[in-house]
Image (tube, rainbow, N blue to C red; front, top):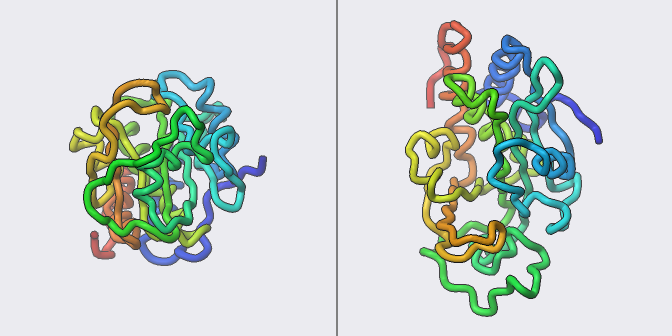
Length: 251
């Protein structure tokens, strides 16, 4: 599996490029580096043995979905020992009805196992219009050793935004989406860390991926949102390094 640092080609100028540069410096000062891996099989392999996870999200597991290097990748932050300090997965979903994928469970399983099939999916709140080239992100994980203080917070901020920029750059994704369990989605700090425009409950009941009753929330943003918010994280990374803010306008 090829591995390299994140390089933007199509959105490398302006706030996006400044964000990647600031992240590279911030990680480097802590003995870390960001790597990008086509496909998500490596992510699935890592998460199967990683400590303190919420389980393996089948959306990004090639065992449950048709995933290729042309429509999926994962980012890993590696520490000085070359171990994964944090990671996140991403997929491009081309669909006329993203909310329909949630209601039918096809967001998690394609094809949907017969035992999980939903013959008449219940209508979900509103017509959000999420369709076309949808970027979907998940499997965000931070190693327990790094789940403290500012490093933990900024790792989450950085990975959540770097994945969306990479999907925009590589796949031309438009809408930005992810799902979270209620215990996380209800926390303002967690919602701010992910940086999506909107959050709403999209499933409340038995949830086959976990085998439990869950209240699942959809996080989503309209196309272009990521480019409007990365400057804030760029300045936070620079401030943590003791650098003065740049003159570019904040968003």
